Length: 126
Image (cartoon, rainbow, N blue to C red):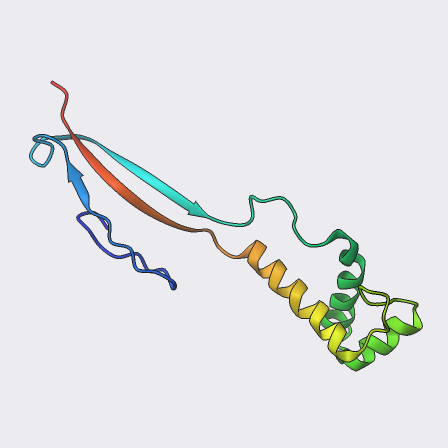
């Protein structure tokens, strides 16, 4: 990307220019970078704590045992689980819990995206 290029981000295209200070183009001594990291992994846990036990159980029944969402809903109801507002769990509700938890877990484990910008090349100190 040195000399201007584009970053391969899905949402945006970024072009960074290299700034040469003084005679640094012909006689560089150092290069400075600004590194911008974008990650959610450094943030505190944001999944609703009250939903963790239910979502853990739904994930286990779906991923480990391979049950359908209807079968998961029936099993959870038999075990005494209820939805977030105290309603009976149905297939749609268990699917929603599963989908939201999977999306949350994936966003927390996705690779860190970064870009280098504001490149400054300084002249050699003599």
